[in-house]
Image (cartoon, rainbow, N blue to C red; front, side):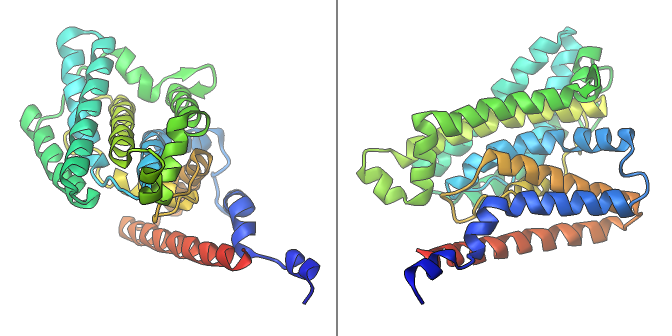
Length: 323
């Protein structure tokens, strides 16, 4: 076979890397529009956007973490803990700005503690965030005494339920977070360091990049986004619920993986995560509209994660063969 023919030979890895996530989105959206009654209603489409706002914001932070080859499985517990405290501050002070500040500060502190322990003691991220899952959920129940925090301000609720014209406020916040994180990942030296460390930490260190510093900062950013996510969720619920956020880490991580970020680190995009989150939201919504049992929905999510990882492995192997 000539070199020219080899160049023209179809390569699945390259094709999927360029167009795969977009094609999946189009196929799923068109299928839902054609075969699921009520899917295309304005109310339902807005419901999907409101439902995915929190997990998508979490997914943006998870993208940084997973590109580095790490993980955070504590999102659900963290947003419950942070969100309940933010609601308590809002009720006590009547100031939504105080609640926002507290949520962001606590989120960054949790991210700092997580990043410090992981980098200082070389504890696997899975183990550290598993411990955080238990601690944060226990903290949420402890600070609220197991009670729902009601009576939050309209400003707080507006973040999760309000609209600016026809656009949900939660979506506006989501897009602001996307813009900030996109600039950091794509237009700053730190963003290049993320990919370098995730691709080969030893080579990155040899070139003068500190993998520990890069990882620590990623968990700080992740923590800030968890704080934002907690405000969106509790605003949507119109109260502080200590049991809220269950399995949110699954939706966030699924969105990242479906969006093309490799679990082995080194590659991924925020645009992919955004589209992945919409795909996961559509699948969840379609199953709900069709009356699918909630336990079956969990099975479907598990299958999606495994399928996305398999595709990642296949595309990477295919891309290597093409070199």
